[in-house]
Length: 465
Image 1 (cartoon, rainbow, N blue to C red):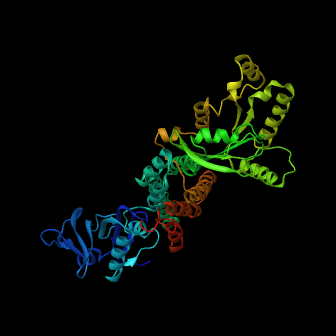
Image 2 (cartoon, helix red, strand yellow):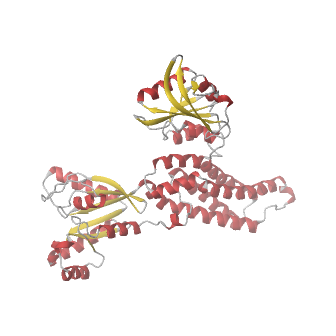
Image 3 (tube, helix red, strand yellow):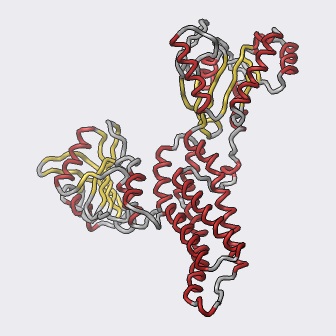
């Protein structure tokens, strides 16, 4: 990859706004900007200004003034990309944005590709690969937990842990390789006892990071919660109460919800994606049958299932018995999914009736979706299903599937090394597995990479980043 040219892109979202920021990066960024910038005072030349300074002036095209702007100057190597970088803050008119960008293009810039600014930061050693990927996660974070994880990784929390393990393993690998040069003398430079301890510690850390992906993945993508039950028990009303808005149509007519309705909220800093499903019942209605089929598909995809029932139905013993059977069916079909059993319309029951139902179904939760009674308790229960202890302790949490895959492969090689040490394998055979483990560590931080990998990663970035 050769990145010698100067690139330009809009760094703020497209569309009209109060201001817009246009970013340039490359060896000619300041020179090009100098030909288009006229300062308000003293006829400043941007190339003569100190780094990390801001200058007021106008962007001009010949005798035509396009806009009054602020230009921020960041000189290499002390910039985001490690190159000369300029950021032009102009008024947010679409016309102004395009006029300035087109002017820079005519002066010798090239339009940046997706993620090219961050790619240059990686290639110039300003970020390692896992930190660069965290930039995209930070931009897309929409709740406190995903923001916290992205910030930790962008600051190097994850990569520094991996780099430390890799360095220690590399030191021992060097000693093992050295032994191969003195194979005829039958000497050992690498202390096998210390090496066993290191391999055990690396294995422990890798397993912890791999296990954290189960939490990190749902925090990053939001936890899907399926709200299921018979028609007309208040599923849509519950969705509206959780979201605090009229998101789903509510009607006394059974079977109103024919398709799934989804929306997301943050509870305790964790994103939850609620799915209001069609009521489960026997029906000859073709459209409703399709909706019920989708309900079971959404249960398959959900991390948590909220099984909702009408409290008034519990007055009948026949219903209680059939309800228990339905609960067991769901538990048997989805044994690993947390199941919340909820009785709606609790405002229509007296204390004795509530107590009687509790005796029959101890794990049941009562609420009134219509009157917002018990909604906060339901949210607390949902939050309890998420292991946020790692977040509170500021532990490293893996959220990236590419990192997860590399960690699994690295652990597999480390287990081979561990077995080799226990079996007394020779250094040359140990060295093969150690090299493979180092390779997978390097894949995470970017010591080992290729153009295809980088292309896939940075293609998911926005253009101006």
